[in-house]
Picture (tube, rainbow, N blue to C red):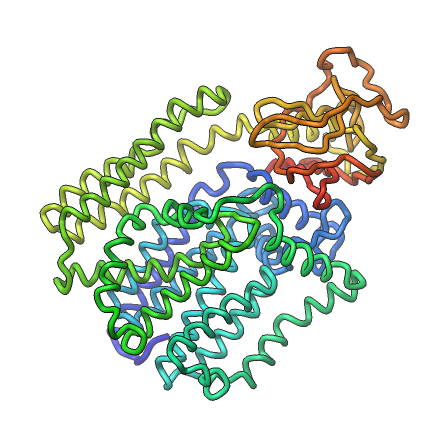
Length: 590
């Protein structure tokens, strides 16, 4: 990354490495304070546990069935953490924390030549202290790896386009990064970066760069060498069943139809991006206004800015067209926006631009109002709706104080001090979430209580495998507080079979959000299921497995017979059949 071997380079490298170490500490502190969050983290954790038990890290499985949700790279990352720190929340999440820190390090090193040392460092710090960074780099999910690899791929391609002396190296890095992105989340890892690159070259009227200088003759073989071995291996081992399900259901299906109830309006990602980039997103209007002022020579004289705008716009626009929507899907659009913000901040600090003080103070006023609303919602509305949840009235205090102080500093044009104040507010909010607000949630997680009960029944016995048929109405779905009530008894077995509860229902439509079940009908208990010895007409006293949050599609059918396999000593997985396939309900106790 260094352009020359000098004392200045070494000093900058030391600063970047120091920021990297601080980022590792920042993303990893308190990571093991909470158990895994339903539903994604426990699913990936159990899938990894199944693969370890089967001594097979090639085929992702869940409850001894194929799990075609994501490819293998994230499982390998989690496996590395588990080997180092054990099968617990800390071991499963540490990989994401390190990946987040690597993202910060790469941004600082790659942007130095593109924008200079100050903008490079500011970009890294903005990325680290954003609100969504606190969430996404503390989860055992595939998103952090995709963010890192996509960022490396696109910035390396931009560096190759602008700097002929490092073109070969940067292009090979870009192609390799796209390959690893494809190993992490599938075709999106090369299709969207490729689309962004093509759009950029089209706007520059330089599409011939792809075959003239793009080194496709080297890049394509590198991409295939990295990706094909695993995709071929999993295809051969599963007779191509995993590959077909992954492509047609998890990729095409997610784009054409919403899954697991994850849908939203067309403004969904505009709102989620603004909230996820807090507190820095409040300055995006000033940043875009500054870019608009130089629009006359934009396409040909500012290729860096054009590339970043195409990157952010194309990524958000693509997923806006998708039927399935989640905030994590557009995090890859954050780095270009943070870079543009950092360039604007440095421009203001250097005196090259003089923003209106009232505009900046108005932006901080918007932040102040958002956080005031959050305090009211978390401190008064949530406790009324869910009394079991802890009071979170203090959640907006760090940003609230930072916004007030930063507003006064901006009014006196003390730019650097104002931005440092907002950054400190971001760090303070993370500390508050990690050490004060989030840990009490462990005590009210229904899945945790469920897992603890199973662990108590299992004791020190070795894992057992038990098969049983699940027929219509075998699982009781009772509305109430947005939870699906699942009860079981029969102590003394490794896997507690489902037994009768107050009502057995088969539902055609189930809504967690609206908290009701429609088209429900009572059906008799299947004769093959042993009755609960303490069952009464009311809620049985033996029903120890209580509420467990579930995210399902609107069309949920408990239809044909299925098997439920193994519930290890500290892990249980209960599957139900939905309109879009098997949906797991998982409780993982770390």
